[in-house]
Image (cartoon, helix red, strand yellow):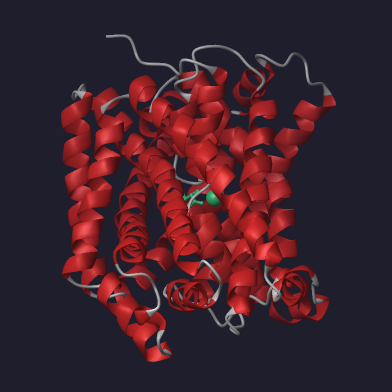
Length: 437
Ligand code: PHE
Ligand code: NA
């Protein structure tokens, strides 16, 4: 059977945007920003997105479109020697990230249901009540069930294939995310606390950068890769389903632009909610957004409805990202072993589910996995891929980038050199700092 391709250009872009926009923008971005000192972090992060994220996204695109293969097969086809094994790192990373990503996504589904059945008032009667509510959602049977539910949805979409699964799903989900998010931001603007919240969010303190750069740098690099779904072959896989030559740089620009815009808008949603409830973005932690937002939704007018919309929106965003990770794993089994799509998706989904079970028992595993995957595996994957494309196969990469654009002249060289040196250095330093920290 011929390998599937996207039906439309919009389908490809929406799938990539759907992958990019997820818990990274909504759950991780605000708490990392809070942890790393607010807008100072935002600035470094934005610089990294532009200077490192965009060129690195193109690297994945050219590898995928050139080979029309899963990441393992793609790198094996282009490379020789030890390079051939880099793709396996991506598969391992995918397993790990999806396992805890699904657990956290399940929490958002659970909070959506709580809003519908009970509202948030009882859960937010006191800080202790909010903590207790979160504890009950995050671990134990509830957590396990919603993890299972979420993985079932992911398996269903991937089993249905590229066109009738992923493409159909993202055409509904991505516009829904954008509309709901803009609505929520507009609502946030009506809150009295918004002025104070915007000020916190938008006034960078350069002193903070100078003081804390050893932690800001790796956090910003890790977040830049995580948010753009880079460093584990998602964008290689999605680009491998491009049947035709198109301008990859343009597509990458749209994807990076939308992901960044959405992350920034999320700040305009979350920070007003927090300030309205008299909370300051604290030192973060994966549970904080749940604890503080339940209090916020109990306080603000129409909080119950707003809360349901918010949590559901995050659930949708997480789903459109999670499918891209399972697709990496599925494409590997399908391409390399000739396994049918449906059993591949189901078998892998179950394996990922099992790997996530410890997280539903103790959140210690979440911190461990998230830290390991984000500050080491993704960054290492991106580093190896940049070295590979920049130094081992630059000619092929350049030629592939120009397919569908035309002769780029000096810009093509610039891209290769950015990948060869600045990307490699920033990623290497971040990896180093991330390891020693
Ligand atoms: N980009 C996704 C997000 O921001 C997370 C992700 C990482 C998805 C890696 C796929 C691969 O939530
Ligand atoms: Na993202």
